[in-house]
Length: 313
Image 1 (tube, rainbow, N blue to C red):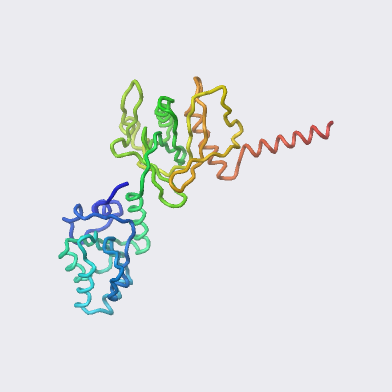
Image 2: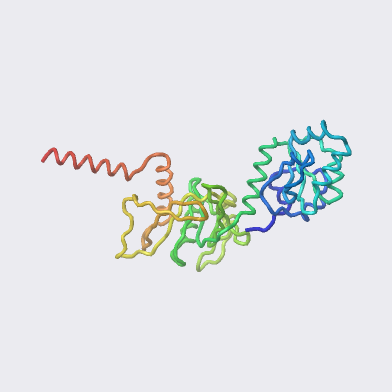
């Protein structure tokens, strides 16, 4: 989990315009993902003012300040909003910037930013970005691959063949997100996101070969920066004494934070094409989510066969 995000990163990722304070973008830190819309503060109520948040001004705030306050009152309020730890002032819809806001911001070295987006959409974009960057993270040993648009996390013991399987999946047209270590974080109540640590991004380690750059060898279409995790495939060495699920009706999950992710176990032995099996598992998972369950079809066919045999007897 990152302790803070630079305002410069927020500007780049959410495509904000810089109206003033460009020289301070790399010096101002954002430590919380919540965005403040300072409506009550414009009326003079500062008892619970969250000055450590990005301050977002929309049409309501700008029009109220312009129509209901004098220049002196606006300057006084904006100066009270400008704290040493206030990351930035942001104005939506490319609304005109109050001169008093610029004056107060410059006095505290606070950047003034803007966007053409509506306030609600801009708020959502900034919040999603900051939540992703500031969210608590957990590292998982495994591979993360985008297979037909599904994020598949491949786990298993060291040496079971995870990296080689990921390489084969890339050769089959799928996209690598992370090799060996996957950083995961919860985006919302139902979504888990996985990404590669910056030092390992686009890299894949193959025993006997070394480290290869997947983007350099297979092109930009072979990699992604991050993806939602939809399915976990756990590779296990074949054990004749262990019973593996043969019909696919055993539901397993693995919990990360507050999110339960479906999990299947695949036995590994010589001669099994793991890439094709995992590819098929991903397609079967998608089919189930679309309402088609081959296991149920088999059960129905079996029941029909039993009924027919009972009638004949």
